Length: 313
Image (cartoon, rainbow, N blue to C red; front, side, top):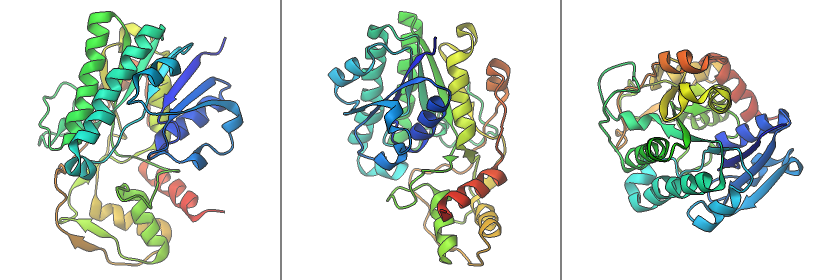
């Protein structure tokens, strides 16, 4: 019998891609989203195939009712932005740390089999060592990183103390279709592609030589599904990087986007972004060994697919 899944933040960028993949597999899917950052149109095409709960994970009673009858909780909901966390750390803490604790307690009490948490590579902070290995100590640079790492620690504690199966996936700069280019806190790739398609110059923070491990969303979806199906002895209570295992500078990224779109525009440069790390690169050794994870979509192919989506029909 097909399992029952709850996707928190299922109307968001990663969440809606995850919901689509589960629906395609014939799974029973419940989505919990308050649409504060998620978009209803992200669920167009499969609204009739899901159970949609419109409420907030900051409300414990909502978390409890949403977890009833659920086998796997895929916890994607968060306020995901370093600048937003610098401006309003309390709101980020409530949405990321407190709400994760709410969901963990609700999932455990409802008898869910496993809880998969969308962590963040920001948990590493600005450590100079590359690639980032899961066992590294944190050197946090933002309230967002602190709140996301707190969620990780709650997951590990629930696994250790209550024997509740949890898996933490540390995302490295996920991008792809449904990522909102119009948001005030938009990620760099949809923002840059939108600028390129309009023939406008993007503004690069700092000198542009900072590097990131940009990861196409299909790879993150694969990691979530593997985190549900892999034997508990290999994954429960553990933290895993989810990335491509290669890095690119922001300057080179803009060049690649120009190549993909045919744009010819020189970028502008602004001040460095407060709370940003300099370099990021995922070690994938652990997730490959434990879950047989493999990068199925490269950065170049992911950029091409994202350009196609943003160009529209």
